[in-house]
Image (tube, rainbow, N blue to C red):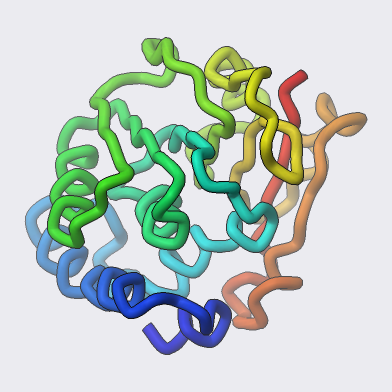
Length: 208
């Protein structure tokens, strides 16, 4: 939890409580339904919560922004972002029902009012959102192909045009190649100094 405050010192007391509650909740749920590697649960704040919040370093979502999290798993990156952006709405989708259950239960337990959940494949989702986010759920080309239909071209209210933001690791030049004329890539190590982030990237692709 101290790691979150290191990079986001201006959290409200409510946000601090919600972030602090995540460790026990995910530890408990992970013992029943494996959504995080058992070896990795002790690194929850660094590897999962803070990693998710890298998106907040790329774009400060304006109030009223709607975001869909594709392949959310246990709720990353959407739940940390929903805590950080309480005036935005987050729709979490995953094709695995038990993972959506964990995300739903964690969200309910910390009292989030700005999250909705759907057990489905992204191909089935018809709603429109300002942004789509994801964390290493599929190759970039597949993510863009399947989810760009869900990005609204209206209500452009943020500092970046509506589009897709995904968190990735490792070498991405090949994945980005088809989008090189419009995609932006960010080194997460520029935001967070822990060694874990040395190879972590974020990619933004506007949908136009």
